[in-house]
Length: 125
Image 1 (spheres, rainbow, N blue to C red):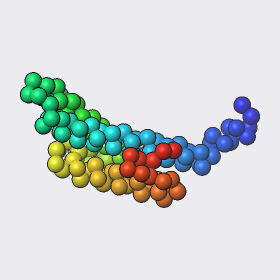
Image 2 (cartoon, helix red, strand yellow):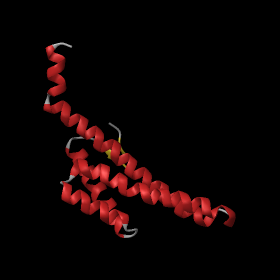
Image 3 (cartoon, rainbow, N blue to C red):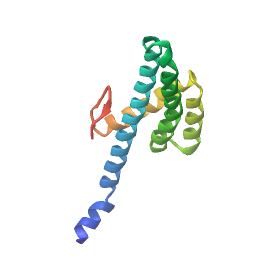
Image 4 (cartoon, one colour):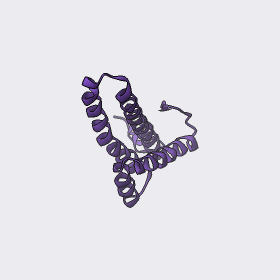
């Protein structure tokens, strides 16, 4: 590897680009978990009674994945104490919406401040 290539990987611009790519990727995962949860909630009313246990299982798995998604995205945006607090709040069903909102809002603001366009389903970097 040439010296120029090694300097490029060590530059702060490259590190910032990698960080923004991570934030965008983790935000899409977080939005995906929200979509899965909403789909499971809606499906509870649309499927026959025999299949409701399957839909409830999908909803339960989604409820377990959401705090993990919050944790992964929040580690890129907040200090450790705030990350722990947001993750704990994310476990509680209705309070978790506040945590989802705050983390998603901060991710969107960070990406937009860097000049990246963010849509409904996150940013494409």
